[in-house]
Length: 180
Image 1: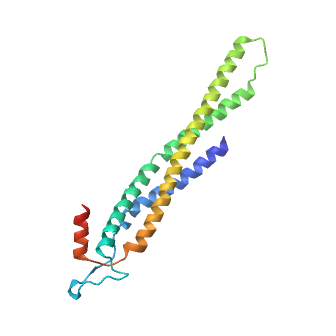
Image 2: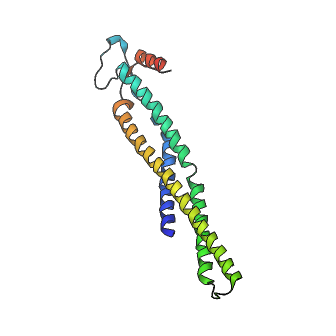
Image 3: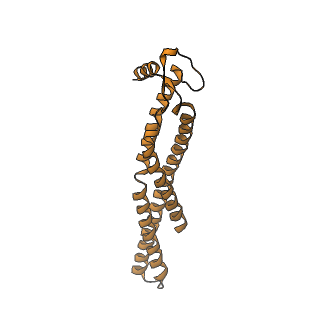
């Protein structure tokens, strides 16, 4: 039981640390390159975004913002779910300790046997509930980790191909109008 809870707490701490960093990065999903001077004519090179590249970069920026918001939303409930799992774990430990310390010694005592059987059933229901909630939590955190991986890959691609590239102002205006 404690092994599972330790894993869940560690996972919670990891996801909580990620959630704070993505909120701050919303401003990072923008193009930080400079508009180029049109008086010299347009020339596109490896440091200047073409209209198609610019449109793609704007779409990627929006996707990064959306995914960042999804990650923040996903991580909001982790702390309360971990607290709930911790409480269930403590209840299971208390129940198990009671059962261990209070075995029914009288075989012919039907009332004592019925009481113990009821406690065993209640204990087993707690364990089942804990296992169900732990599985759901692990599935949810796996989804969060998958989204985090996707976000990191997209952010890396955006940083490399978009963030610091230059562009022409009229291309930007056209891309913005086209993407609305």
